[in-house]
Length: 165
Image (tube, rainbow, N blue to C red; front, side):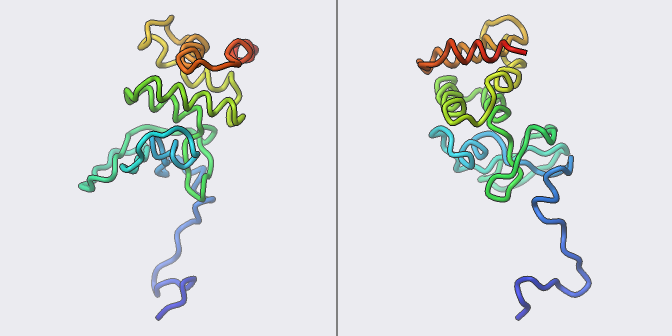
């Protein structure tokens, strides 16, 4: 029986996960799976979700593949897996039509745990503002809307921080 660190003859080991983080073609844990890895919210993550830049299909019912690019600055390693940052996953959830109240609670957790800068969070929400009847690309307004839905106690301070350049 081969040692767990040995390689099969004729095969070279692939790069370690931390080396793949900056690979633009790497599958990145995203959406509800990313929220679960970050310990955010209470969304069901019984389907594993990944974002990949290339079109892929799977027959597995417990796997959902999203097509898209996740730039290096929008991902980090969580438990050794390339995972979308909290600001990105909130945008992904809104784009996937997840219940806005559930997403609002996640946004509050992100701010309370200081996982993202309020301005960065607002920037990640820009593409979804008009979907909520707000001025196009107004991520600050959408973030304020989400924080209002969640009755966030520090909403005014978070909005002021997001408007700072």
